[in-house]
Image (cartoon, rainbow, N blue to C red):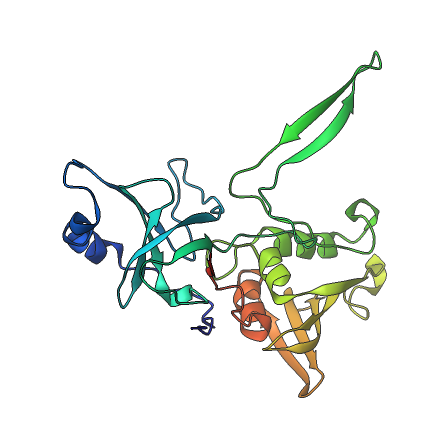
Length: 276
């Protein structure tokens, strides 16, 4: 059964307190009689913060569907008898049956090239004496993704435009897990262009960044421009079907919600289920 993804910029998490109150009774028939304890964790659209206070992008896992309720699916982790994962049913794209062996692929933030932001990367380093070695980097949680700009940021001489780029890369999206740049990745933003004016032309030729989007909610071009007179932003949305729409007086801390309202179709809000 294929389920439709949600389209809410503020995803609704599981009621973990209520689930925990009934969990012991639900799990007891599912574990061996000689099992003295069980372990569980939640798989929601937005992961919980870890001990260090940041959220890590969850990895896929496999297991057997042990129980399905109105709000969650209980999965017995592969290779275990007493390890369970509680999956938010509101965001799964395919409802399996009890007893199915499945793979669960939670949502993970990605770069514009499609790679996960926590993907391991390797880079060759060279010491002063010519010695070469390889460094391996893996970042868990908290990393943004850079916009695929047509020119390097180091060549941009307009401080207002640089500030806008930094805000798009660093400010949080409405869901609190992603940054705006991840929102743009999930919306399918591409073909980024810049308007970089001279300081004397900043009013007549506002610094701006434009990109195209084509998804279920919006198809067309988005331009975010700096209004020097009001010290705010103007968002122009030129749709292929509805024409031009303009949102004025957008303060920097409103950028995320205004862009989400325009182009976030909610298609990212999916926990994928593969029946094995």
